[in-house]
Length: 84
Image 1 (cartoon, helix red, strand yellow):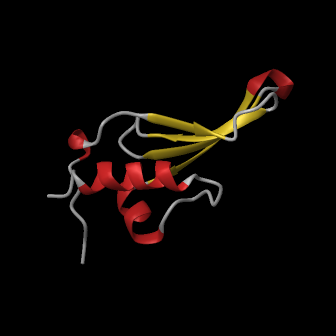
Image 2: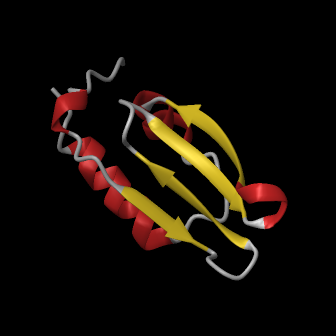
């Protein structure tokens, strides 16, 4: 079954975890998809990003195993509320 997600209904948010003096991990919904990132303060603030569609997240789960359960559930709820 294909999911039909109205991206306009998903709030733009950013979540961060594992924040420390080295950097952090996170995900945001700013670009009509999930953008997973790892930020490292060393070497001029290097950020690595990977995009995941909302549909892939609902089907396959998060791209990062380190995501806290409460953040994952909030993301899941936000996307579920945008299903058509």
